[in-house]
Length: 99
Image (tube, rainbow, N blue to C red):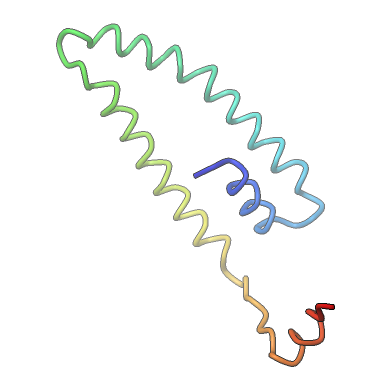
């Protein structure tokens, strides 16, 4: 999922006063993951190159699946009480007057 979509979804889930803190935390976690996981995966690849060349991709897919499960669980917990407002045809016609 692209980062702008993740930012947009996160900003919809939190209160306005927390946007800066949440988006800063997201960016810091992305940078920390890049600093930590790149050397780790390179070392795993070097160690398993001759015995099991696809092992690093297996580890990467497991990490991704765990992250997806965590996102789904947290998203379902945050969505409680979140309701969409219904827009009626009359209101839509009034707000979208094109010249």
